[in-house]
Structure formats: structure tokens, C-alpha cells
Length: 409
Image (tube, rainbow, N blue to C red):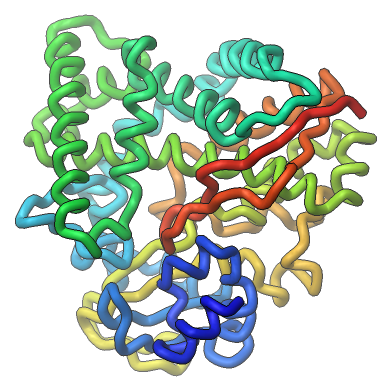
């Protein structure tokens, strides 16, 4: 809290873009104050520049519901700008209609209910193998051993990526998803090197599939689509970044948040251990409670009004999903708690809302749900031994390390 006090004294106290708030896990009272005093707040000076900060549910839904008025493309979909050293890497989450619609439609078949049914057998087998290899009554890192391994395996399958190299996906995702690297020019250059390394690797995979028969992986889907088959190299890399970070950081941090929340809220843990029927709802609740991507951004395309505030053309708007998912007007007075039988857990905004809602939402829920089912099958209780090391960032909301020990209940 001392760190927070110093920073508050030096900055706008409602500037919630400060990375240390998330590193030190002290963002909750700042957002509570914002929701109470200034749910739509203009931050004149931040390390990302000026922006409108939206911390409650209704304004965020309104902005998300008006994609032509609030663009994902004009100013980027995070607080940082989409240009790195003059290199632009478009991705469909950062495109407006009609390009967004066409490119999203290309990859959507990988996430249909029938495809989820097909993938579920393999997800369950791999989850069982990872859990069965864990040591009991002995300390290990849940983030690396379980969360990263399971999500990296899933990405390798989605991309038909060489299995022996799958941890490259983790490394690339960590570099690609870290928007804080703009602070250091050397790190920005290193990130760009990693992006090009990934792009060169995936270009080889692309070239190997160009003349092959269609297969149900994402690269083949891109190749055999009108919307994405003629992407230039930078746009190809941009969409790879989106799919890698979207498929890795989000689910992996939800899986880590799950064991942390169960350990922190023993009443909910007891309910879940007593009733496996709560698992589907718990999957929604942990996605709400963790909110693995803290914000998305939009840029106003014209002067407008938002709940009585004058928004000017070109203004950047940060939609803080992490705060909206704690909005008491929507989720009640216990919104900060992890409640496995919460009646409206599925109303969370962690996947976004409207045309940009996460295309892989079903897959994330499936992976988290199967993890809980397999843990329950083994009567596995995960005990967090010490506070985890958290990601210092206002975009990816997650964990770097979490020391745990598993016991049987």
C-alpha cells in the first residue's frame, strides 16, 4: 500500500493504467472509488497519454454496442498505439467493419459447438495426463506446470504447430502481450525481434499448407478463405499475435486465478467440492472474477455524448472490464467475492460485448470446465503456499508464478 500511496500523490488517483496497481494487487479500491465517484473519468496525463476511463458496466456495454461510433481500428484496441517503430501489424480484433466481420468469420469455424465437442476428448485426455504427473504434498509452480502447459498444448493443436517446439508459443505470447514494453526502447526492439521470429516460423508453416488439402487448423482456415488468404506478412503476423495471446494468456491466467480464488474463498471451494454440478457456473464465475484481460480500448470517430460526458472525435476510451465485472449494480454487494453459485455469473464482460466478443469464448470455458472436472475426479485440492507473483501490466491481468501444494479432500 505504500507504493500505491506514493503513486497516488504523484498522479491522477483515478488513473488505473498504472502497472504497479496490478503487480501489487491493489487495483480493487482504486476502481471502487472510480465506480462511486467518477465512472466516466477523463485522465489528462498518463504514461499512455490522455484517455477516458470507463469503470462501470452500462457505459462499457454502450460503447461496445456502437462499433461505428467507437472504433477499434483508428487508435488501437489497447491503451498503447498500434504502431511500433513505424511497423503496423493489423489484426482483426483491431479492425472495423467490414474487414473485421470477414476475417472473424474465417476463424470462427474453429470454435463452433461441434468443433468444441470434437476437441473435448483430446482436451480431457491431455488435462488428465498433466494432472496425473503432478507431485502430491510437495511444492511446485502451478502457473508453469499446469496453466501454461495446458494452454500451450491447446494452441499447438489449434495451429497444427510442431509439438516439440510448442513452448515457443509461450515465449512469443509473453513478449507479444506485454504492452508495458513501450517504456523501454531496447525492450520494444526485442519484442519486435520476437514478433519477426514468430512470423518467420509461421510463414514456413503457411508455405507448407498452401497447396495442401484443407485441415481444421487456423492456418489452413486462413489459407482457404477469401478474407485472409491474401494478407501481407505484417497483417499475417498481427493476426497471429491476436490468436496466440488470445488463446494463451487469457485461459492460462484464468486457470491460475481459479486455484487462487478457491484457496482464498474456502466457502466456495467447499460448495464446489460437494457438488460437481456447479462446475459450468464456476467456469463463468472465475472468468468474471479474474478477468484475464483488464481492458480494451476504442477511439471516437466523431464528437458524441456518453452518459452526459462530451466525447470528442479522436478521444481514446479505455473500457475496464476488470472493474465492470465488480460493478455492484450488476453483481450485487458481494461482487468482489468469488461465488461459485452466483446466479448471473455469465453476465460478465471478460469476453467483451458486441461484434468484438471473444471468438474463442467457448473454448476457454471448455478448457477451464474440464480442468475442474478432472481435478474433482481426483479429489484434488490445490493449496496456495504464498502470494503469487503477478504480471505488472494494465492489459494482461495474470500471474507469473504461484507456489502450490496439492492434497486430497
